[in-house]
Image 1 (tube, rainbow, N blue to C red):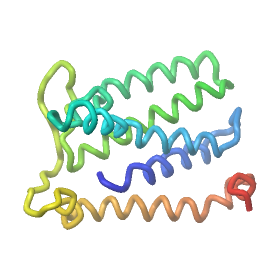
Image 2: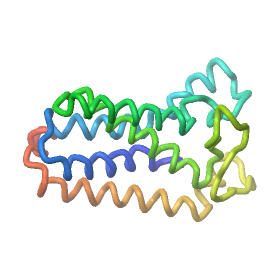
Image 3: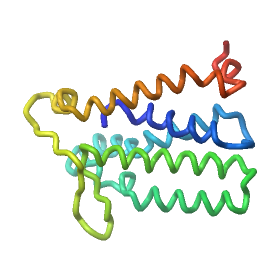
Length: 175
């Protein structure tokens, strides 16, 4: 995924906000947590470029391990069980779900080590053949980019209708 992680986090967290009966915070913060979680696994790009110098695929780092995100979701659910009115438990759960969504979406056309750290085997649903330079052009001309565009369109649609179900949307955006 190149462009759809942030929009996918918005879609995920907007559905959580819509379905939550009573939130201990403004919905805006839950949207931020979901979007931040959806891009958090790619924060490893700083390490990839500045420390590792691109020697190892960044999806091999623990930030892209499904086990990490499943553990964070489990911990968040335990916290939610005992402190369901806690702002931290809601933010942690939404952030963790966003991170897990990132890994799921990366599995479409990017290698994800689903059994890491126990098994060194990568998984991808589709292989994007390297034909063009720069590397990202291979993804842009592949059909999987249509999935990304669909996610971006879905997020835009959710954003446009948000005012109908989120009473403080205009206040949050400063309108």
